[in-house]
Image 1 (tube, rainbow, N blue to C red):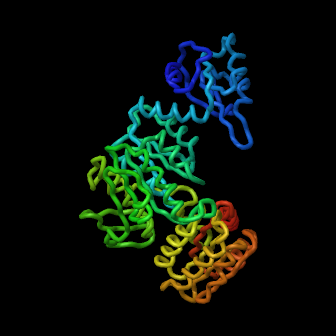
Image 2 (tube, rainbow, N blue to C red; image 1 turned 180 degrees about the horizontal axis):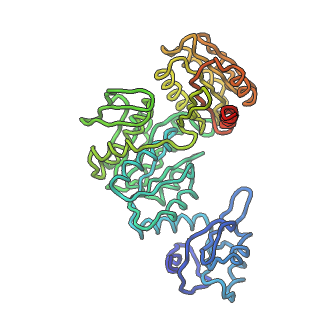
Image 3 (cartoon, rainbow, N blue to C red; image 1 turned 90 degrees about the vertical axis):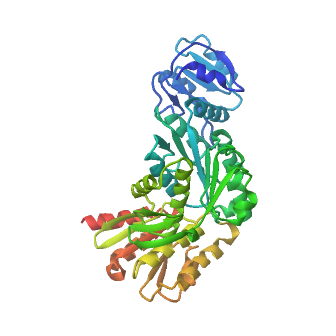
Length: 448
């Protein structure tokens, strides 16, 4: 990356200028290498500017800084070729990411929503990858720093960037969208995730719809059909709303779905109405950029789940379905409903859901009511709940067996001591519950 690339910063003051070609941009002095360009970032518990000296010792040949004294310190240091003073290094990083998108001519797909973002991202990726060189957000790196990393990690020849956009409060989706300028903007749904922070679903919808402010005029906005999205969307161009009601499900069983959508038949290597809805976003994105339905079908067939998201494995005598990456009331209902529909006599292992505010107990109780009233719930269904809030789930259940545990150790011990409770175990909870540790205990026991 030539040093001239960094001179385009809107508010940057060039303190030292020497033409040079950099290896890559780095924000981490633990992995920085020779001829990298260092961008020091600040967080609640760290300040990257304190490590500029270390970055230079490790071989960094240029850097940004918001400290003029630090900048001036390296004016006569031959190891450093470029020093630029900026008011804020994170803003500068995002400006550079935007410049890189423009320079490389990337097309951008931005995806947000209360749940289903990562699954939809993976589906969009598999669809578009059938026709174009495509790069995507890694794991859950879906904040503004993850956006920048995704842009600069994209290999040469990339055509499409698939960006997952997460948020914890108002303004965060707008910030990423402002610099990403999506060609395609997708909102998977509006649920109750983060309602403890934002106060209402209306506020959540308003925050998610921030993505619509910066979709390019000749682009498209794709969203699950929702009155709140229609209320808060600011996009005036082509808009496509979808829902499971637009689909005719032809076949569905464990690990497979086949359905008709707008005159064409599609398949997925996964079950569940919520996963079919996620696929509709990917289908519409593909159709918009001219990918034929047959090619979209091929892409969807190649979809694979990622770690802790509907992963299926056999451990000992159990079939484990691991969906414990995260949870909110909407995703909990959708996935639990799928399990009850698709499996006979399942064991539901459910944990606390976070960030639900003062009404957290009420939202957990509603999950219990949902399970209790589900037509496929029988006396042989087992519901194991873990945590103080999840106890509210168990309190509402009268139609099947239920037990509550204070912690994951108690839950794991109970499962191991009661092997006859059922052979289909479904795990769902917020990440903070660390449900993967229960599965690891079952895995270790299954190996002995």
